[in-house]
Image (cartoon, rainbow, N blue to C red; front, side):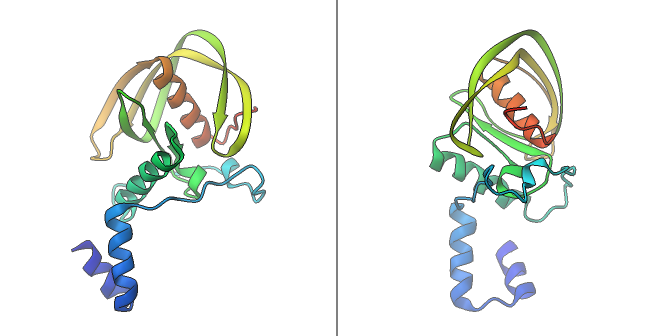
Length: 170
């Protein structure tokens, strides 16, 4: 149904339609905006995601496909050129989409070394809190409240920083 609607609206030739089907079903690797791309979109203000966004589902698929490709644990929408308040994480115990998140931090600060896809081949010392409480919508638009610690808390803070325009070295 979704692909047929796109075909009608965009009047794509049949050759391109088969490519579109493949992309939608498999996902694609998205381009990561890097610090050298200094029309620097990573510092932009992001907007809340709306439920009616017709491309949201595909963007989520593509973002997970991208972190699998790079063997990474998180990715934010601004890192792939979409100024939306959304990021994803994928660890051995959590695979989640965080839409329009709000966080509360607690616990002691811990300085750790972090890497970022937007700053390839660089490591930065970053102070992170031990615990995160986060309110967000998941990819089914269910409002959730989660509590995280350890690696998941670090990834959530990093992803959230991207949504607020805060870069890893700041």
